[in-house]
Image (cartoon, rainbow, N blue to C red):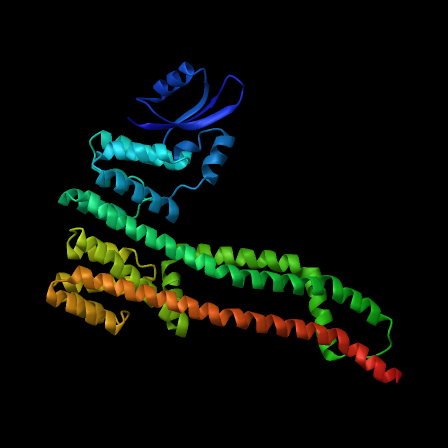
Length: 413
């Protein structure tokens, strides 16, 4: 049965929201009345935006501001719970229902029940998941389809659960590692802002009564402080608008986005990090799809679409064409010049020994370890660099404040 989101008012006049399975909207309203609820709004789960706009302004705002996809944590939890239930022998529809009842988030529950309703109607699980591309990626759907085809859906889901949990753990580690640098930058900006906003203007007032020429450092500081006090808000607003406009332009202009990616790839440390991350993502995806029974060409096509950098993605798509024409995978990838030599050698060894999936997994593991090392090194260099820069700024402010006092003492002496 299809799932529906509802908004109703109970006997105490309080608004209630939730998700309910029923044959139709009319059936949902009847079920709500049987529970002594007054239905206000009933709509199918995951309703399209063009239909949502026809609702009231309050409902439209609630829909537009809610998150439509799944976070990495939600996807990892859903995959693990679903895989565990299937491994225990439960049918797909019952497993989906159990996972939906387990979650407390109406949005996630509605999404799972919507998938379940398609499965109950006779559609394949992969087909039901593809109806929600905002939540389930092409990798996820293709792997599920391969698991259904091979009859080992539970094992494939376990592999997907490991993958999604690994991605989530990596993001958590990165966020945790960034807490300290962000705190340092925030405190430093706060101190400098306080000095420029309150200390320097008072200093200007005091020095205004002195009949002496101020040092150049002090004049520069006074000019900076005056500019920030007069135009600081407009500067911040202009910066935000510029960033927003640049992101919109990159999103719409594919050629400009490709040129910006090429420029980033030429940067020493950043370019190497991007190549390493895309290599790890490609190898991990290709390993999962190949081990799940997806053909090599289809797996490479799907893996290429998950590469975020346009030049690397185009190079891999060109490599897929070479593989289709009969070239070895490692030679096609080597010709892109974006994959590290050790990765291509390991893939060549996997092709020769018939252990391509295992070698791809090792490549992904090595590249992910390299990403972790790069992040640790970058943070280790970033923290003292920020401290030195902010120390230099504070020293500049202190010198600008104290130099006129020293000159005044020498003049008085």
